[in-house]
Image 1 (cartoon, helix red, strand yellow):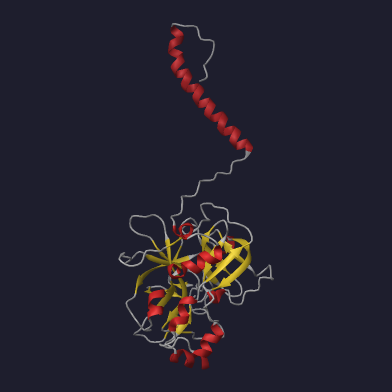
Image 2: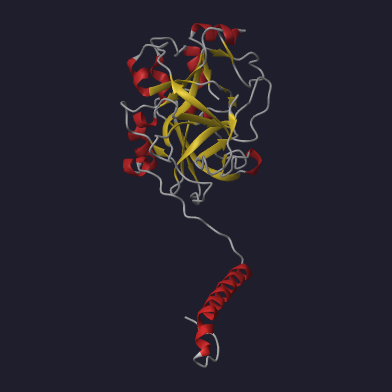
Length: 333
C-alpha cells in the first residue's frame, strides 16, 4: 500500500517491462538484434555492434549487475524462442553517468513534474567478452538519428520476452506489438520532452520488457531502425508489488503511456563508451550472407550430380553429330 500511495504522488510511473496481448514473432530473422537479460531482472536489449560486441538497454536493468557471477552475467540471443537462445558472457555493464538508481528515484520522487530530467538517462550499455557472429538470426540494428518530419504512424513496433499477463509467466516466444506516438504531455519539462518518446499501444507492456527497442521501419525500407529504449510506463501500478508481472491502469479513462529514451540524444555518450564512430552506429545494416552447412559427403554428392547433368546435356547435343562423325565419348567442357 505504501508503494501505491507513492505512485499516486508521482504521476504513476512504472518500471517498464513484456507484452500482454502482443503477437508471436514468426521468425528469428525478423528481429536478429533482439537480446534477453535474465539476471538480476528480466529485461530486453538490442545489439548495436557485432564486433566489438555492444548491446543497448535500460540502466535500471543493469544497476545491480554482478559481473563476477559468470552464471548470471550473460545475455541470451539468436532465437525467437526463449528456450533455444544462445548465451554470451558479459564483460562490463555501464549505466549513463546521469542515471539515478531506482531506489533513490522512488525516495526522491524524481517523477514529480519539476524533476523529470532524471528519466531520459535510464539507458545503459553492455559489452560482451567475445564478438557476435553474423547470421540470419544475429545482426545489429542501426540507431535512428533523423528527428522530426517523418510520418511514423503505424510504422512503430516494440518487442519483448516479458510477462504476458497478471500472474502469468514470461513469454516463451518473442512478442511484438505495434505502437503509435502519443500527443499526451503529462510531464512538462523541456529536457524530458526532447529526450523521450511517448507511445501508446493496443497491447500492454509488462515487467520484463524494459530495455527493449522502439523500432521504426519506413515504407521504402526493409530495415528496422532503433528509435527508443523502453524504461517506463505511466498511469500504471502493480496490483501485487510482491509478485510483479503486469500492471493495471490507474484509471479506466487513462490508458498506459510507454516512455522510450531516445538513443539519438545520447549518441555522444554511446560513441565515447564504445569507441565506435557515429556513422558505424547509424549506417544501414548490410544483408547477412547466407550460410549453408554441408558435410563433405554432401558437397561431393552435389558436385557429382551437377557433372552428371552437364554430361547428359552434352550427350543430347553430341548424339545427332554421331550420324556424321565418329564420337568416342561425351565431351566435357
